[in-house]
Length: 603
Image (cartoon, rainbow, N blue to C red; front, side, top):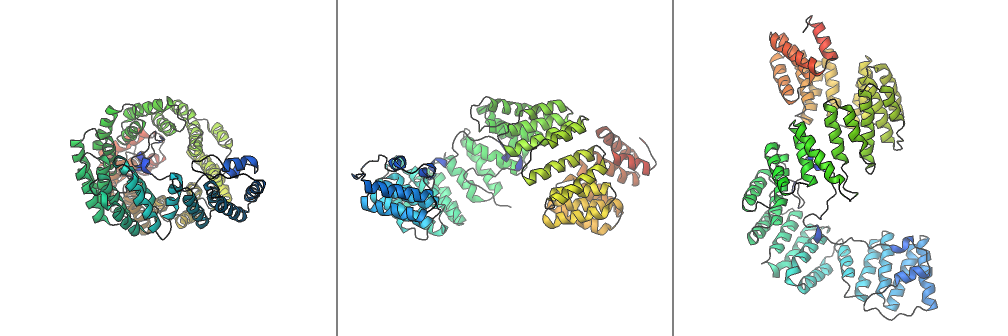
């Protein structure tokens, strides 16, 4: 079984649930223990050199030497800042380091470090930070920066001494936080085994604490020592049986979804209010495609926190998966309302708005869908672009094709990828309107302008086929396969085209089989496979394949294909029933019209 991918949150969600679109209001578990940023702010980069910059550099700190700002010192500091401003970081850095050593002022050592960091010079930055620590031995900030840099080197001995001293000097009740800080620092170490060995030595005196075993479990896991990680995580949970973080970590290092699920279920029986574990369990159930069980967990979470946007979004997505459009709309409306009442600009409901537009479109309420899209914020440029393309698509579906094209032309796409996407959308609108010749010409020009866009090439291939240009279609699809070897749509499209034309059927079967291996649960590729099997005269296999496809997706074209297979097998009443269902779903279906004409029958 594929190993679980964890990082304290435990479960990597499927694409359906990972896009919750809500900036967290609180730090995630363990984030409070994270080390500070490894590079200090370089304030003077945006300042004019002179007295103000020097005053900022020589701001008040405790236990500072009495340094008189003589005219000579003022001149040297000013010159160093001017050199740095002009891009001459080396002379500025050396001057500031010399002045720091002469004056014994830690602020100048810190400024040297800032200059080296701005110039991306790690060794020089570490030298300056060492001097800063020497001049300000009680500065916790200097220690933090030193640790952040020292663990990136090959020698961890200096940092080991500092970690041991910090733990020893920390009161017992706060020691766990320092352990987590140490672990966060050491995650950056190049040699994970050496980092783990360091932690073992430093934490040896504190083996009776849950935190020490938890940190060792995470470090052992990072060092790919799964057995040791399991042992340490189990010990942490034994020491504190209600620790959610211990349960999450144990599930992480197990690397087995079934075992993790059993662990979570047992933990929740004893600790029903453990929200982090319940959340991880729900997402794990989603990964296992146990949607009903997952939905029950999310609903329990919603009872505890009725306005939790993440839970509302998850339930909305799961309702869509279960074809419960009303439930999905209710949850997503609440999601949008909750975020709409938030004063936090980062808590953007746009992804929920996009889904509500999708639901409205599926029931034919195009104006309602456009209303939701009107509310999508421009704060997320990518999502905003998607909403504008969708607006054009919906406007065309309302029968206003030229207005939709105007809307597309008004999009000021600067990025070449976005320009290609706009052209691709316009081609799609023309194809949907039956204006295949115009679509072909537009896309032919587009692929000349953007020859490296696989998506444009793919759409051009479909347009070429509509124009009865199979050679151009195949050439374009072959280019897509070469550019994106795992693009299963290209293999499927070419295979289906060959099958539809009744040529090179063995090759068509091989192409579709390759696509199906890439996307084994795609009903449309199953449909293609069933169709090529039918063309090959393998009626039993074709019927079985098409029935599986139709069970997954009751699409009109799949129904047409399955109906024709049944018709040829003498099951004509069932075939007629399927075709009537297809007509109800898509009254203008070209596939149905052509099939009925070819078989000389009617409904």
